Amino acid sequence: MWTSDGTAAGTVRVDDINSGPESSNPMNLTDVFGDLYFTANDGTGPKLYRVAHPPARVAGRYVFYNDSVFDGRSPDANVLDDGAIAVDKQALLPGLLPLVGPQLLAPFYDRGAGVVAS
Image 1 (tube, helix red, strand yellow):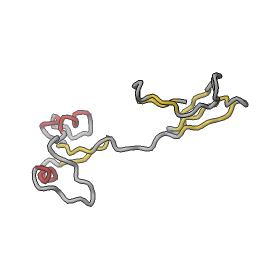
Image 2: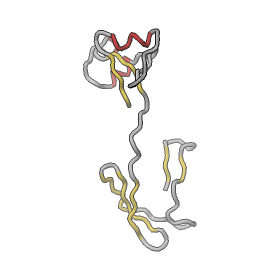
Image 3: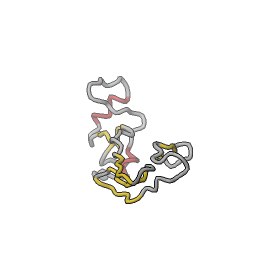
Image 4: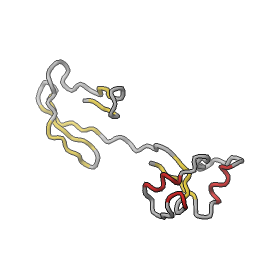
Protein backbone atom coordinates (compact mmCIF):
# COMPACT_ATOMS: atom_id res chain seq x y z
CA MET A 1 0.00 0.00 0.00
CA TRP A 2 1.39 3.39 -1.02
CA THR A 3 0.69 7.06 -0.37
CA SER A 4 1.65 9.86 -2.71
CA ASP A 5 1.45 13.61 -3.12
CA GLY A 6 1.78 13.09 -6.87
CA THR A 7 5.57 13.36 -7.04
CA ALA A 8 8.21 10.63 -7.08
CA ALA A 9 9.82 12.07 -3.93
CA GLY A 10 6.44 12.19 -2.17
CA THR A 11 5.54 8.55 -2.93
CA VAL A 12 6.25 6.10 -0.12
CA ARG A 13 5.12 2.63 0.87
CA VAL A 14 2.85 2.64 3.92
CA ASP A 15 2.38 -1.11 4.30
CA ASP A 16 3.18 -4.37 2.53
CA ILE A 17 0.03 -6.40 3.14
CA ASN A 18 1.45 -9.57 1.58
CA SER A 19 5.18 -9.28 2.18
CA GLY A 20 7.38 -10.82 -0.45
CA PRO A 21 7.11 -10.91 -4.22
CA GLU A 22 3.41 -11.88 -4.38
CA SER A 23 0.71 -9.24 -4.79
CA SER A 24 -1.90 -8.71 -2.11
CA ASN A 25 -4.35 -8.37 -5.01
CA PRO A 26 -6.45 -5.50 -3.59
CA MET A 27 -10.04 -5.55 -4.83
CA ASN A 28 -13.48 -4.07 -4.13
CA LEU A 29 -12.18 -0.59 -3.34
CA THR A 30 -15.11 1.32 -1.85
CA ASP A 31 -15.40 4.82 -0.38
CA VAL A 32 -17.60 5.00 2.73
CA PHE A 33 -17.86 8.54 4.10
CA GLY A 34 -14.26 9.28 3.10
CA ASP A 35 -12.78 6.03 4.43
CA LEU A 36 -11.43 3.49 1.93
CA TYR A 37 -12.53 -0.13 2.38
CA PHE A 38 -11.06 -2.94 0.31
CA THR A 39 -10.26 -6.62 0.38
CA ALA A 40 -6.70 -7.89 0.03
CA ASN A 41 -4.85 -11.15 0.49
CA ASP A 42 -2.20 -11.14 3.22
CA GLY A 43 -0.94 -14.60 2.20
CA THR A 44 -3.49 -16.50 4.29
CA GLY A 45 -6.56 -15.45 2.33
CA PRO A 46 -8.61 -12.33 1.58
CA LYS A 47 -9.39 -9.97 4.44
CA LEU A 48 -11.27 -6.70 4.75
CA TYR A 49 -9.14 -3.57 5.26
CA ARG A 50 -10.02 0.03 6.07
CA VAL A 51 -7.91 3.13 5.50
CA ALA A 52 -9.31 6.10 7.41
CA HIS A 53 -9.36 9.42 5.58
CA PRO A 54 -6.69 11.78 6.83
CA PRO A 55 -7.76 14.40 9.37
CA ALA A 56 -8.52 17.87 8.09
CA ARG A 57 -5.63 20.29 8.24
CA VAL A 58 -5.23 23.99 7.75
CA ALA A 59 -3.24 24.66 4.59
CA GLY A 60 -3.02 28.39 5.18
CA ARG A 61 -4.58 31.39 6.91
CA TYR A 62 -5.00 34.60 4.96
CA VAL A 63 -6.50 38.02 5.43
CA PHE A 64 -8.56 38.93 2.39
CA TYR A 65 -10.85 41.73 1.30
CA ASN A 66 -14.20 40.19 0.41
CA ASP A 67 -16.61 42.14 -1.82
CA SER A 68 -13.81 44.50 -2.85
CA VAL A 69 -12.23 45.69 -6.07
CA PHE A 70 -9.65 42.90 -5.57
CA ASP A 71 -12.25 40.12 -5.99
CA GLY A 72 -14.44 41.86 -8.56
CA ARG A 73 -16.85 43.12 -5.86
CA SER A 74 -18.10 39.58 -5.39
CA PRO A 75 -19.62 38.89 -1.95
CA ASP A 76 -19.50 35.13 -2.61
CA ALA A 77 -16.76 32.82 -1.36
CA ASN A 78 -15.10 31.70 -4.60
CA VAL A 79 -11.80 31.60 -6.50
CA LEU A 80 -11.94 35.36 -7.02
CA ASP A 81 -11.06 35.71 -3.32
CA ASP A 82 -7.56 34.47 -4.19
CA GLY A 83 -7.00 37.86 -5.82
CA ALA A 84 -8.13 39.65 -2.67
CA ILE A 85 -5.51 38.20 -0.31
CA ALA A 86 -3.64 40.90 1.60
CA VAL A 87 -0.08 39.59 1.27
CA ASP A 88 1.26 42.34 3.54
CA LYS A 89 -0.91 41.26 6.50
CA GLN A 90 -1.20 38.23 8.77
CA ALA A 91 -4.36 36.59 10.08
CA LEU A 92 -4.95 37.41 13.74
CA LEU A 93 -5.47 34.14 15.60
CA PRO A 94 -7.62 33.87 18.74
CA GLY A 95 -5.80 34.95 21.89
CA LEU A 96 -3.11 36.93 20.07
CA LEU A 97 -2.72 40.70 20.09
CA PRO A 98 -2.43 42.63 16.83
CA LEU A 99 1.03 43.81 15.83
CA VAL A 100 1.79 47.46 15.35
CA GLY A 101 1.84 48.43 11.69
CA PRO A 102 -0.17 47.37 8.63
CA GLN A 103 -1.44 44.19 10.32
CA LEU A 104 -3.56 46.37 12.61
CA LEU A 105 -5.47 47.84 9.65
CA ALA A 106 -6.93 44.57 8.34
CA PRO A 107 -9.85 44.23 10.82
CA PHE A 108 -11.01 47.81 10.12
CA TYR A 109 -11.39 47.57 6.35
CA ASP A 110 -14.91 48.92 5.71
CA ARG A 111 -15.99 45.97 3.51
CA GLY A 112 -14.92 43.41 6.12
CA ALA A 113 -11.84 41.33 6.41
CA GLY A 114 -11.92 37.58 6.76
CA VAL A 115 -9.82 34.54 7.31
CA VAL A 116 -9.94 31.55 4.96
CA ALA A 117 -8.63 28.07 5.62
CA SER A 118 -8.13 26.09 2.46
